[in-house]
Length: 265
Image (cartoon, rainbow, N blue to C red; front, side, top):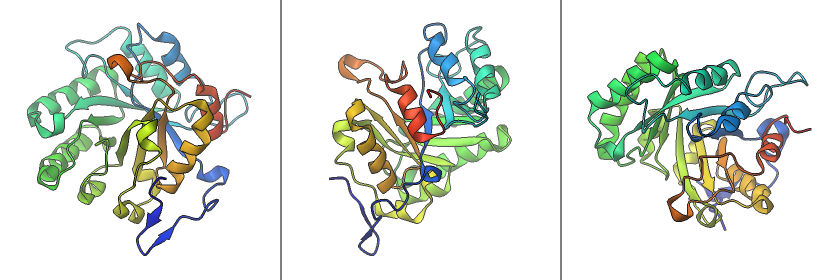
C-alpha cells in the first residue's frame, strides 16, 4: 500500500482532511497543440473550471495549465496558441510556459531566452520546469534559474517537475514541486518522502496516467494521505510512446466535480 507514515511514526488518520475545503486542486501538464485539440483548450477556459465563476456563481478547481508550443515557446508567435492562452488567463487559470531543464543540462541562457519569448508572445503567468534535476548538487543552479524567472515574470508561479521526491532543499526554491509522475500501477504503491510532511499540501503535485475511472476515489485518497494539494489524473496511457496528456481524461467532468464545485451538474 502507499507510504502513509509521517515523522514520529504517525500517519494521517482516515477522514482527517476529507471535507470539501480539503479537496485537491487540478492541473493540466499540457494538451496537444490548440490547432489539433481546440475542444480541450476550450474546455479548460470554460467558466466554472478555473477561478472564473460559472453559471452557479462559483469557480472551479483548475489551478494551472502548461503551454508547450514546440518543446518550448517555438521560434515565432503561434496564431493558434495566442488566443488559447488569452482565453485561459481570462478564465482565471494560471498559464505556465513549458521549459525543459533536461535534468540540469540546459544552458542558463537558453532557458532565459525561451522564458522571454513566452512572456512576450503569450503573457504567461509563470513556468513549468520539466525534467527538473533533484540532486543537491544541482540545487544552486536551479535556484538561480527560478530566481531569474520570477524576476522576469514579476513573481510568477514556478512549478518544478521532478517526477519524484527531490532533495529537500528544492522545496524552498519554487512554488510547487511535482513529486510523483508516472503510471497508476506505480502510484498505488508509491511512497512519499518523510520530509514532505513538514510542508503544506499546496507545495506538492502528483501527475498520474493510466488511472481507471473505477480507481479515482482511491487515487484521491492516496494524494490526500501523501500530502499533495494538486493532482493531474488521466485514464490515457503512455503505451506505444503516446503522450497521455494530449487529450483530457474521459472522466474530466467527474474529476472536476470531485475536486471542486463542478461544471457537469
